[in-house]
Every structure is written in structure tokens, then in C-alpha cells.
Image (tube, rainbow over all chains, first blue to last red; front, side):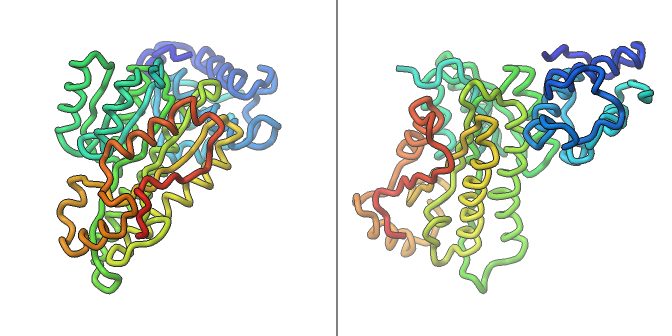
Length: 98
Length: 246
């Protein structure tokens, strides 16, 4: 799962590609369908995004983007939109979701 | 029989005493290790275990510093890709009666003995695979279960570790993560060597088996709890105290 892609590598990548990878994280961690992963998808809004699912999701995103989040980041990751913002804070050029 | 073959364990406070004994018995049972502690002795312990053929990483730092915790997380991920066992062993003890405990000392004990345990567990469980019987072993104390006079604040910190263990066991059971604690009694380590002689003498007299414990006594219990032998045990606090009355 860990693709060891640094934020620096991603800057030359398209935001769409990084966003696809984020969607893949949600699919892998929560068992959602890709089309369900929309910006407003929120914590506890679907069955598998509970506290344990959140733990898995964070782990998968950390591995995928080679990051270690702060505890505050994890608490703030309350939706896909928030996840995008937090990744951007860590230097991942993911672009705003449509 | 190597009880921990193909297992990855993170042990805090691994430079001496109970932590070092746990590192040694884990390595002897086939585990790969990430060891951390404040002093450079951690790296010496790691080097010694590597010389015996174990895969060991030593990290020096302060576990109350979240940046160091993140460094540990990165090291575990880059070296091993996952974590199977966390042993929260690091702790400090400062003796003082209730009215004589400086606020700063009390704060330091809570930071290391409680806050760091919770923080490191938060980070560690994110690296655990539910299908690999992951587990957390917290080193509490008989002080936390029975209370020790002359060590009220320390007793409070270890009581918090006991409560955290039981609560985390419930919360993490659905993720397949076992959480247990060991409550050592009077164990001969550097940490207790400096305690008042009369206080030590009274404690030893209260031990049913008639001798202080050794770090190896505690390490054996840690090995059991981390191993498949304890695969159906969670939320428990095992006394390793030789029948000490406290």
C-alpha cells in the first residue's frame, strides 16, 4: 500500500491524479464505491466511517502519501473536503475537489 | 519455540531495567524491534541485540514530544511497514508524600507515565493489522492497583494506566487489537535503587515469595501477553509481584 510518494513528487503531478489516489484510500479503508467519495462525504455519515474506520482511513492515507499526521489533523479530518485541505497543508498538491 | 517470530514490536524505555529485559526476551523469541528511550544506551542495547542476529532499530528521544512520536512512526513504517506489538514501558517515579509533591514533578510524571502512553498508542494502532493478533502491553504498577503510601502521585499515574488499559481494550477489541497491562510489584531496577532504604526494606518484607522481583520476571509476563498464547486475553491487568501486599 505504501507507494512512498513524497509531497515533492506530487507537485509535478496533476491534482486530479492525487485526488484519485485519495479516493482510492477511502475505497480501500472504508469499502465505499469510488462514486460515493464526494467532497461532502462526512465522518459517521456512512456505516463504515466510524471511529475504527477513521483509524484505518488515516493509516491508509498516511501510507499512500508517505505522511504522519498530527493528532489535530486526524480530529479535523471530518469529511473528504477536510482530508483534501489537510493533505494540502502537508504539501500535497491535490487541488480543490469539484 | 519462538513465540514472536515474524512479529514487529515497539518498546519504550528500552535502555535499561524492565524495558531492556523485555527487548532481550522478545528478540530471543524472534521478534524484530524498534527500541526507544531518552538516553544513548538505547542504541547500545539495539547494537547488542543486532550482534546476536536480531533486526533492531534504536531511537533516542523524548516520548512526551509528539515530533519524536512521529519520528518513531516513520521509522516503524520505513523499516518494517507495520507494527504488531506496542510495549508502553517508559515511566518515571518520584517519591513524595501528598503534601510534598512539587507541581512540576507531578506534571512530569503524568506527561511520561500517562499522556505519552495514550499518545503513542494513538499512533501505534494505526500501524497495526487486525489480522495479525496485534496487541498493546502497558507496564502499570502495583501502585496503580493497590496504592503506595509515599508515592501518591506516582500511584495516580499508574492507576490511570490501568484504567486506560481497560478502556482501550474495549474500544480496540472490534479492531482485533488486544490491550493488557502488567502491574509489577517491587522490581530491582535502577529506577527504584534510589528510593529511601527504609521504604525499600518495608516493601521487601511484604512480599510473599520473600524476594524482590527481577526485570526478567516482568519480561516473561510481557512475552506471554504479546504472544499467541494470550490470543483471547484483553483488558486484563496481571500482577507480577510475588504476592506483595503493597
